[in-house]
Amino acid sequence: MALVLVRVDCRLIHAQILESWIPQTRSDYLVVANDQIIYNDLRRDIMTLAVPPEIEVAFLPVEEAAWELGQVRYFNRRVALLLANCPDALRIYQAGLNFKRLNLGNLSFSPPKTQVTGSVALDERDMVSLCKLEAGGVLIDLRNNPSDVSPPFSEVCACFPTST
Image (cartoon, rainbow, N blue to C red):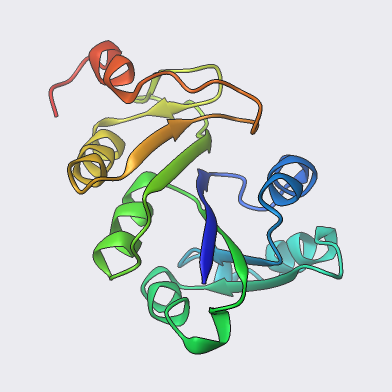
């Protein structure tokens, strides 16, 4: 399996994913790993309707997605994995899904989060998760679109008001 994109974006499937990231990565399989979406039929149906028919899509709980993506049937696939938050990215990594890069796309601001880029707001729990991933060798990439330039994660850490 080629895991061509691992992205944290609270919106999960939306136009930016379908119009920018999927063509850029040439993904043919889209996996949404989220424990809540599997119980929300309406939201899942709306997202599925937006996906072009040539792209397969699956909605799975986080730990199940880690196991599922290790199966033989995915070995010839170009998989884009979407997660709703940073702790879920750490959970799927700790469950055995190895990836070298994590893209942070859109994480909405709400107190007590700190806005660290135009589209990414993080709280202490996010930072702890990201620092653990980085310590494991994962490059943290903060780009909304494939053509954006990511600031170094160390700059994001430096502007964060709490210690991690």
